[in-house]
Image 1: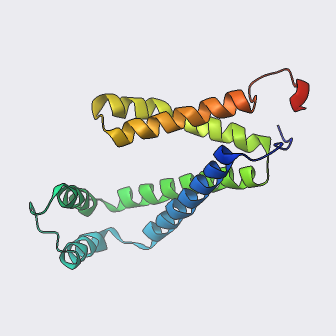
Image 2: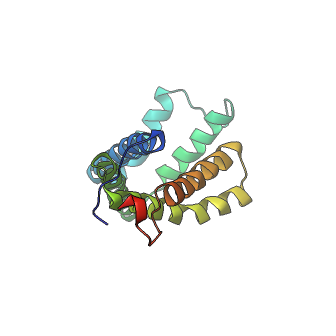
Length: 165
């Protein structure tokens, strides 16, 4: 499982960039949440709403959606903030580990990408079935394509090493 990948194609470069950028952002968000106190969240949300002119019930669909999300964030307890911070840091580390392994051309990184992406597919299928949007369908198709590409093209779960040894 520690052997090197022969070459990096477009799909692998896409995965490296996507996983690396997402990992850094989510990890940074998690670290930031460790510095936030739950009692400061309502004031920060109110300040954000005033700064960007988000009046309750006003504006378009995006403004209403943002106001709803901010309302949910405003009600978080200290325990919820800590759990979200821990989850964000761990998920960010996983994403950065995947990107780093792909940069180093390690086979285990491809296995990790397949397993991590594969675990999310049932959740995405449920989301598409419950709340179908073009974005959700598109993301589901992309993730399924990534898993299929890595399994078939890279021969990840094939026992006969043959030409890939």
